[in-house]
Image (spheres, rainbow, N blue to C red):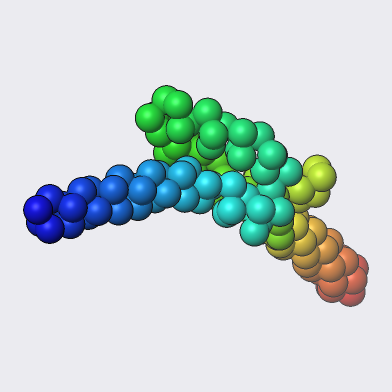
Length: 115
């Protein structure tokens, strides 16, 4: 008789733990989006609740959506139409090459006149 009640207690404990774990897991993308100050964190949270009813079929996409955005670099493409640091460096190198060519042309002209 005692083992029947013990087995029932273990079964209830396992069911409650699994139920809580599923609800806790669905909220991970929202917590990540909140920590990253994601602009769509409310939509990610609602979609996480919807994923509960779809047996977490869309959960991997929510995880990706939450991790793509970072506050320091945005979506990783460009920020407000500004050039990236690499593009700025390449543009500066091109300007310096043009200036060097101009200075070399200026220094070679007086030598030709003296000869």
